[in-house]
Every structure is written in structure tokens, then in C-alpha cells.
Length: 340
Ligand SMILES: Cc1ncc(COP(=O)(O)O)c(C=O)c1O
Image 1: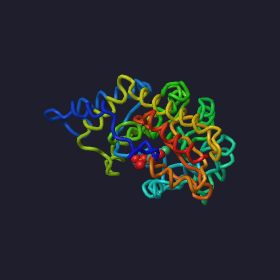
Image 2: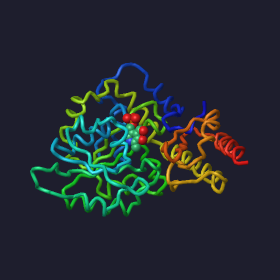
Image 3: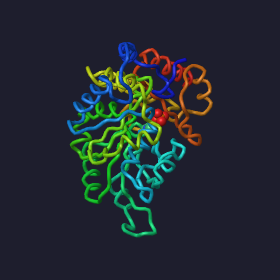
């Protein structure tokens, strides 16, 4: 099967599998005390600055939930976009594990504006009202758009002034760095973000994500939070080895450049076709387009993809590290056949 359903549908990158194989020698200490984990910690510091502290977890939901546990008390609130994965795709895990409240806010193409955030900051100090303590931004967003550096900076400066932490859901963070032609450090550390859910699985790993603290104060005690939340991997060398392959030697960049280039090709190929309405800017590895309903079943005989909105038949077509030019050409050909 070839799929445009999600970058989760792709297998693992061969260099990441090779690194796993290389780590599969002899014995090694467990729970993050192995050499691979020490090297991975350094690799994260190379990307985010020497103050960064990283902790592996098993999946993206855990990274988000635990990052927020570090920021929030149970009587506090995190401001997030209505469409955020936190709000709609984590089965209430953030509320369940933190005890805190999510406050979903209106967005424009997945992006929260500073005006919306400011308007949401109400009843501060009112004991009857759950108190805002964090903002969560998804970068790139669930609609494949990216916050600009200026937007992130503006939100971080305001958040700091208001005593709020800034969490970044970066399940596909490398795609935003490549799309914005920037660095992890410039985009987040220098902007003043506090903690990042750093994605691996969607970018070529078998599994594994990292919680990366840019604000070292928040990392205090986090090892206990992770263990208490049942997210401390024991054979950490196998998560670390994957991240080493991904981070050292800039494989992250190669993977993101490929996925983005394929998404741009797809967008170009769909642009102007009768019956196809592209609905979102393509700033990372997803193309959103409305397709006539009868086409969807026909197309899915060849390629899987998700209908994002059952009312409008807006579909999400997602590329990944292993999308082939043939996949793109094939999908466009099938759509063109339906156009006539
Ligand atoms: C933006 C975003 N954040 C977090 C996650 C959570 O990842 P997981 O499915 O590994 O829990 C996803 C997964 O689709 C995602 O798209």
C-alpha cells in the first residue's frame, strides 16, 4: 500500500534502522545512563543550545502531556488552538494527566494570533477561574502552516510578561525549520520558548519522541514526572541510537527537505484542476484540498488518505520521508482521469 494518510504510515528510514542495529551490541546500562543517550543529549544541545535538557518518551501524546505537567498545576489552564492535537486527538490525556484545563481558541489556518491569546487572558487572580499558565503552539500546525519567527517571538515575549510558559508541539518540528529556512535555536531557543515536544516517529524513526526543555527551571524534577507517568524507557540506547542517526549528520534536514519538496510537487500538480480546491497554504508536508465526494472512494482504491472534514470533503494529503515522485505522479494522474 502507498499512502498519503500520514507520515506515520511510512516505515523507518534505513539509516535509523542501521543505527539501531549498530546499538544492538553487548550490554549497556539502562534508563538513560548509556553512551548513546549521552551523545543524543549533546546532539540536542548542538541544535537548541547548551542549556537544553532532553528526555526521551515513547510517543507524541506523552511528550505533550509530560511537557505540560512540567508547566502546570491542576488549577491552571493551557491556551491552545481548537484544532490542536492536544485538544482533539489525545483523548483527554492532557487534562487527565495534568488535572489542568485546556482552553481551545479560534485559529486562522491552525495558527493562534497574539490578539486571540490576549483576549483569552481573563480573570487573573480570580479564585473561581482556572488560571492560564501556558500557551501551546503546534509548529508546524495541524493544517501544515508555520508560525513565522516574528510571530513566535511576539507570543513568547508577551507570554513571559504575563507569566505564561510557551510549549511547542513539534511532532514535525524539523519540517518547520526547513520551511522557514532557520535553525532550531533561532526559531525557539532565542525566541524564548520554554519546552518542546520534539517529534521522531513522524520523521523516520520506528518510535520515540523527546521532551526538550529550553528553560532549565522547568526540567527540575522532570525525571520523576516521566517515571511516575510510566514513560521512562529502560533500554534507552535504542531510542537514543535512532535520534543520533536523525540528528547527527543532518538526516533531519534531508528528510524534511524531501517531504516538503514532495508536498510542493503535489500542490503544483493539483493547482488549477477542475473540481479540486486547495484550501490551505502548503508550508510543510501536507496539502489540504476539497475533492468531489464520488472521487474519494475511487482514489482510495489506489492511495489511502484522510477526509479531514466530513462536511466539506476537505482531504489531507500528507507526504513523508519516503514519498516517491511516482506516488505524486500516480495520484495526480488518477485525479486528472476523474476530472474529465
Ligand atoms: C501535531 C501532533 N502532535 C502530537 C501527535 C501525537 O503523536 P502520537 O500519536 O505519537 O501520540 C501527533 C500525531 O499525529 C500530531 O500530529
